[in-house]
Image (cartoon, rainbow, N blue to C red; front, top):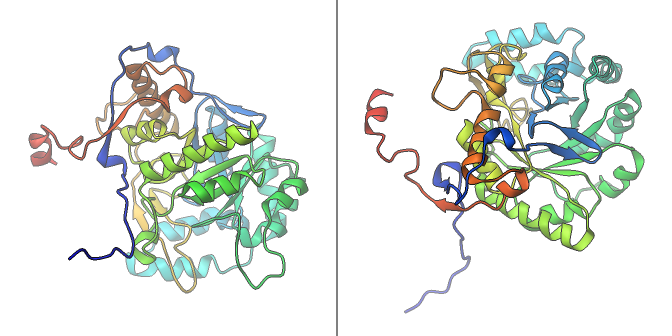
Length: 379
């Protein structure tokens, strides 16, 4: 006898389960255009450094901008709670595994100093860099005017899960359409993983959407809360929302795949899945210029009651420039990410990121293991 289904599940896919099919024509990688646009800002590479204390500080944001990308400064992290954040970051790096979570909870319980928000933004702007900053929805109304007045160029509203409609006890919660009118700079919002949530966010007038819940190397949201969608499926669904919104409004709102990317292959698959840009954390935490001193931790880690992150040791490898552009002698795909993207686009005959969106992909769970018995034995 047939048993009625309560819920029907659909299959979803992560980076390790899919592969990109080479094109019928190929192109010289040097001929590819990988520009990324957010409103009136154009970047020469579609790569963003995450708003995490182990990744982005004033110096890292400056360097990332000089190299053609964008870094996002967390306005609720150590940079705005402490006059000398380097001392705090050193303390985090030196803590034992047993000590680090309560230490982080204590460090991030200190109040945010509003004057430091302005100082950090102005330091980035004085270097000539594009300045992007991030806050959680709860603090957006308070900090958005301060950030805009200090000269921030791009404002990011970021939490574990973000939707256009939020139920709370507050009489008036955060309304993105009103935020868009109140500050005259591009607004990126995230994170989301579904077609409907992404489409509704775009309809509020924002300038970009972050895609991803729980895939980050230092995030434990999926273990703690059980929520999330693997990044390939999440990116494809949100890309479909972007294309639908373009059809209904005539406005193109880019999506940014945030988290889960550990090498060049993952990065290339993100673009083939429909991403306009990617946001990276743990890869950049390995840079010599990263403020985390070879460590990386999730920004939900210090939650006072329900931590959803962990500190991981990523080590310090090479400079940020080598991670992005090489040269490299490592074979694991962790360096020369821009070269990997251009090479993959050339192999697919895709001259632009938009053309990369249309390349064929296949379900291929053996893509990283087929024929690799010797590599597995020696790893």
